[in-house]
Structure formats: structure tokens, C-alpha cells
Image (cartoon, rainbow, N blue to C red; front, side, top):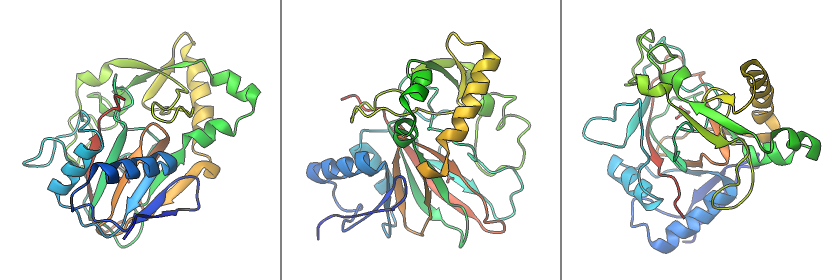
Length: 280
Ligand code: SIN
């Protein structure tokens, strides 16, 4: 049976069937999937029921593991983190703000894989926002405002000891490890060309972006706040609904994502790997 790709009908995302990700991933299949991934940015593979070994094998086939700071991996693995929330957990939702994973790194991950482990019967959707569309929908005059800006990224707001997931964050079931390393800064163009497709789009957003090079801080934050509400506009989004056994893989260079709640009283767990930066 050949690969079947069913676009979500929203701003990005496609459901991919007609393959077994537990079976061998031939070079041809990986190349075919990569092309589909670059076109749709978020791929959902229903009914796969992957083990942690399968998840690692898939991540390796797509470019190897990224470097995952501030999370302790799950027991017995070096590269898998658990995105987990217990049924009775009261801590604020993890990752509820738009972001591109680890954009504060020098070589941020090309993509992220999330494998369903425990999916609540309702809620817990993951939202994605297509940043090529967010860029391309602007007028030339609006684009000129952003086109050459260099963004300053840092993990300090979430992961510094005094950050959102720092020492005051109690009762969270996820194993997050805040550290002073989160204070480091890294620059990236605000609107880079995608390294594989050449298509431009906004990269990351306010939160991991903490300033704009050469711009006074209050002006930078005002610009980033305005931009963030544009980046997450409903015209650019895809609402991903989870199913048991589903694997999702997204491109951090073309979409933002964020978690949502709505599953109070139910447990939710997904196993996550990041895919290393693409080196061409
Ligand atoms: C994440 O941002 O890695 C988590 C997304 C989710 O929990 O839906």
C-alpha cells in the first residue's frame, strides 16, 4: 500500500497513513516523508502505537537527536522526555504559549516528534501556526518593518531558576530542571529562509525571543507583542486532535506550536524527541 497524505484543510498539517513506522524506514521512504513534511509542516501518523525504541529509530532516520536542555529524560533513555500531566495536577499548563522548540540554541532542532502514550478522552489539542503564511500574508510595507531584524533568543523566562518553571514551580509531574544556563543569549534572523525550502517565515516568537538587536527594549517588546498576536492569528493555525497510538512530527523552522488544556481530571502523557538541526 502506498503512502496516503490527507491535508488537514487548515493552515498546515496532514494525516499520513499507508505505512508502518515500526517496520524498517528505507532511505526512499524517509525521503518521501521528508518531502511531505516540508510541504505540510506537521505530520500526524495515526494508529502507529510506537515504542520508545521505535521513536528513537524514527528520530535518528530524520537527522539524529537534538540537544534537550532543562528536561530530565525518562528512565533508561538519553533523548526522550515525557510531556506529562497527572489527572489531579494543579500546576499551570506546560508550554501554553506559542514557541519553536529550543530556538535559543545556536543550532536549534529542525523538528520535534511527539508520541502518544496516554491521551485524554477530550481536550489537550496541540495548536500549530504556519509562519510562512504569517509572513507571506503581510503587505510589502509591513514586511519591510521586520525583514532585516535580528532577534535575541534566551531560555531565561521559562527555565532560569526564577523563571516560569524555576524553583517556585511546585507540584509539576514533568521533570524540568531549571538552571543558570538559561540566561545565555543567541541571535537568529527574525525572518530566516527555511534551510531546506528557501521559503521565508517568522522564526520563533516572544518568550524565547527576548529582544531585537539594536532596538531599545521597550520598543522591541512592543513590536514582539504585536507580532505575536499576528503570528498566532487563526488564519495561520491548525488544531491538532490527538488519538491513542498517534505520532506527530513537526518542523520547528516553519511552525510555532502550543499546548492547550480542557482535560481536567484526565492524565495526559506524550514522549518527545527533538530532531537535530539540518546540516545539508
Ligand atoms: C510541547 O510544546 O512540547 C508540548 C505540546 C503539547 O503538550 O501539546
